[in-house]
Image (cartoon, rainbow, N blue to C red; front, side):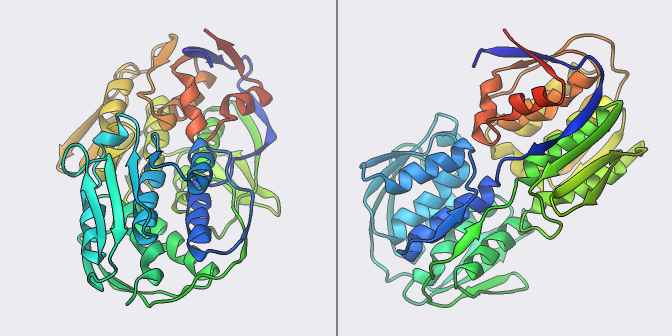
Length: 408
């Protein structure tokens, strides 16, 4: 794809049914668990997202050096997977991936009996993974305020440990629904766990082969909620979403009720309808940090004042997402400031009638979060191919509902 695209919508009226991509969070967990079971499970509707396609390839690879590219779950999950299965691998990724911390996970795996060495800076990939001794601890304490992916990686290998695992989560638990998603999928494949207070206990067990169908991605749905909120008129149906979901990002339905979108669940998925939005809201993104960019971009466009907490993990994502948002909303005459430690406020300004241009910082969610503003004014999106990470058909799906996409 070209280096930039220009997006516009002549009428501002949206109508159509969209088949969303499958959840890469569910798919990647199911792939790891299936591989750990040593049996052939039937996995349906696996995500077309690059992260999932990449993990599928790497799980089948016998190469000595494994490139996780820019995929966080792939890097974290494979670190634990190779450690427990005793595969001697060098695990690396993109330049940005090698700047994303992994020390918490590596130290935990070492305590469990893994042999892992850093090939570059201490605490960061690339990693050299060696034999697993299996004579490590049964009880671990792990910080839970950095990345839930570390915890999910440990939990998925827990039933294969000689004595199982008792994992105590220290501090505020971030992205708790992702941990619960992991435990739910483990249960689907035959492994029971006990989650009481801040402690998760997994006894030694065996995974069993099972059939599993991956749900559509609620993170991808969030951009369509934003589109409906900004449209003049809208009648959009998103296929494949469930009212009772493993995914924490289904919280978008409740959040968007405040921002002008009503959700009606149907047998096919959800139907989105417009309503009036509030002018001042407060949100905690601790359980759904991937929704923050969508909400910031939308509220800047709607002129909604937002007070936000739970953004801590955004600093170590594909980019420093807080800094990227602060820069990009300036072009919309808005400001995003940290008022007190951990508390951010978006102060909207008057959106001038002009062509808007947004950088993506090699981050798929930056591209998709700001694209809906094309319903107000034409928008330039830099490096639009980044959407391949989670929603490769995004630009094509926008064209289906009347957007004009010009490749520059």
